[in-house]
Image 1 (cartoon, rainbow, N blue to C red):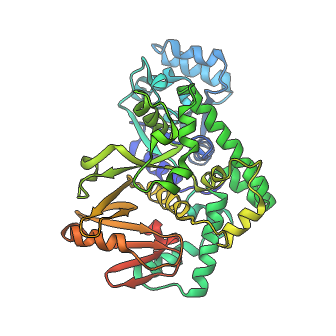
Image 2: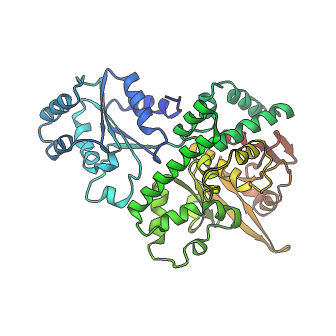
Length: 441
């Protein structure tokens, strides 16, 4: 069991809720939802029952047909799972609840009873067929879980000191030093290559073999493709997903769906919405008016799409090969690959920002005098102002886009950032941050 930050949020929910609400952990498949739920149950309760609805027998499912007699319901559960439930000291986990939406609907009655706590896990839980004909309980709190972030990855490899020390440098506005920055950037590239899917991290720790890690990630990508076919048998969702790396490489202004799907469809917005609901992708919407309240100015038809895990992104980049050769991984790890990989770093920044609770926005604009198009890769709202981020894959210090953006919207801006690969530095009024410091913004 890898240490995960979401565990503390589960403890917080338990202490604050005191059985008044159930908690739903939602996120993409294979990110560790079930594992952290069971670890929480083992450590924080006297006993627990885990019902995995991807495997649950019909006898268990039939119990949800009639909840008028909860004494009988709980008696049957205890008999079937051979677990003694203790009032206010036991947890019941509805794992993979998307496979049995009726159990999710039952939460209203179970929470009202207040005997036990209830934790749900699910992926694709918002897909229409998974919520059809059921009443979503108001007693259900929902939190999102993401793949392991950089700090969680470092914990997995036995490093619990780096991030707190780097945070001190960030808060003091001091560089970490050229030699240490090189090492930290190599560590961060390793994280980008392996990614934050627990299976991939486990394979890396056990084998130190990038080829085997890559095969784990390919299996996860295949699982996602299977999931896409459940809500889109036409294959359009899969095509849109597969094209994410090439779209980011070619189209700074946004995802060009027509270049991927020659014959567009009225169902395209629905497919994109369900891709986003699957949590396998992160969508950054164009903010037509970059101001506080970015959500009020988002353009739902103009967007960029990222993958929830940068390790999966790397594997998808080379999907046309049987496996991503170790030589490619080694070159990426040592920053020797010749291709411009700015979009790979953009995906890492998108993943970091989303995991820290930020909704993703970007902005493009035309400079009227030069007739040049500029792109702000990400926009953050802080203290009733906005903060533009420009991402570079190298140590190049130019930040023309944020400079032109500042000229245009100076009264709206709190701070402007360049995210790059060199050490922390201040260039006039632009703060240049190594990509591994993005987590502190």
